[in-house]
Amino acid sequence: MAALGRDTRGLSEAMQARLKKTVVLVGMMGAGKTAVGKSLAAMLHAPFLDSDAEIEKAANMSIPEIFERDGEPFFRIKERQVISRLLEREKGVLSTGGGAYMADENREIISKNGVAVWLNADLQLLWSRVRHKDTRPLLRVPDPLAALTQLYEDRVPVYAKADLSVVSEPGLSIDDMAERVVEVLKTRPDVLEVLE
Image (tube, rainbow, N blue to C red; front, side, top):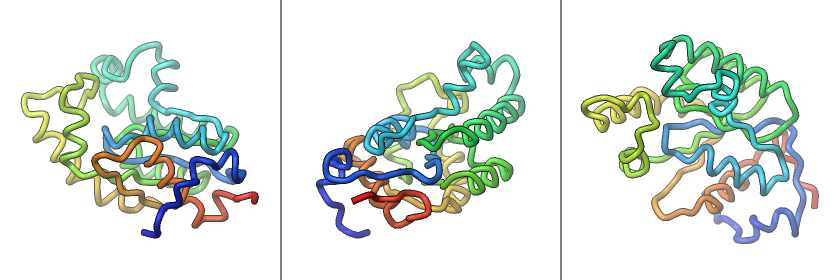
């Protein structure tokens, strides 16, 4: 990867940029899609959207409650509807749930209306971030590490189909990750137009 300029945070001061397509952050739970997405949206002066938050708002219940009451298949249908709706809105940064990119229909919708950016974090980093949280319905099992490992092994080959990839490393701040995403987006003038 090319050296990352330290002035990227100055996107608002040194240069302006305009999103031509919605940036859709995909990846495992704990990869930082929401936190990095908010930072990225601020850097690009673009709206931040979160598919899980929109689902919770529409259902008036949390994701774990939806999983418990209606099951994962119902949740996935609602997720697809919300992602499709959000991609029809103004251009912005969209954070998706960890399983969203697994569905062929979601990948097609994202490819057609946006650009998928995989926040690629390794299993050890993900586990360090999610191990003490009980808000992950798919990890509410007797052996959450084994469940996470299986999800990781199943999902990584699909995440690798994303248009762009940004590697997450221990010790990187949220803003550093957002800067890495900006650098990668600069390679796609069809997505990000830099106005000098």
